[in-house]
Length: 413
Image (cartoon, rainbow, N blue to C red; front, side, top):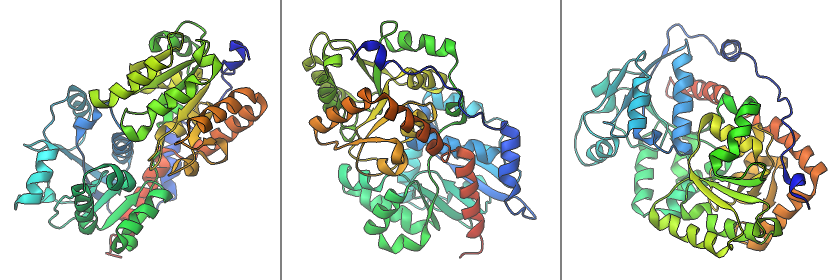
């Protein structure tokens, strides 16, 4: 197979979305207009804006749509921030009523667990709902509490036992638990069956910019930004370096492809991690051989990430534990084929557009990548299907679901 055959197809014009204002107006038109706006107090740790995970992307995606709504009176609160990215984002919210509390969010949550600190709506003012886009155990005075559940399996399988206790406390206190996938909902109600009647589905999504094509100039700069030679095709992973992301196994499986071993097809790992997480990854890269081209350029966001998807031969997502997988939606929206683990939530999100493998088997990963790279016609068919699937996961639609659920539970039902 030649290197040219691994290059992405020229950018096909993606279906252009409606203008944002018209789309928002249309989306809200089918909501019942209340006599008065729903008072929502949004609370999250904005220090998460530094190297944002899917949880932070969810939090900001919902915040930004809530801020646009005429049927919601929004106020924003966070703990004291120390990261420049969080502070910069906070400054961008100057048109919203907001409060930075005197302690960092982690310390606030700890004080609320251990003491009689005032409830959040007593500190920040009355609200109909306190909405935490993560599993925060936050005391409320008169408001109702909604939390988003992102990854129950990760908490139970990979984190210390105390995390189960904290999840149980947060879910017990909450009046409404919003779950990002059907897979996560199944894990949640199995582990915490008393919460079954509180759970509602509100999925993650991709930002609107991923549904617009990257410009030729942005695509032309992508390889230089990723540290690759001009014209070199590449596979891309978008994930942090936590062990559950399974990246050392991906490196070994990709290196079994002759194109990767010979330096004709690169592997780009977008993300970062602690030294203990990065070390086994570097060891796997060293073992791939001197000719293999593997790059770890850190995080990318926004237009740079969009261009990286658009130029990639495929996204590879071998995670062992995933409650959604926002990069899958972003890649599909950009017309990038996706090779995915056949477990947890990834088949739910990728649907029939994905190419699936056993994430515990290097041979399975290699074989799936081989098939994806070799079958151009089938690849094109699944790319077209992926664009259709991705269109279901837009933040405006997710935000409309959120507000509908909040409205539906106003009376305590």
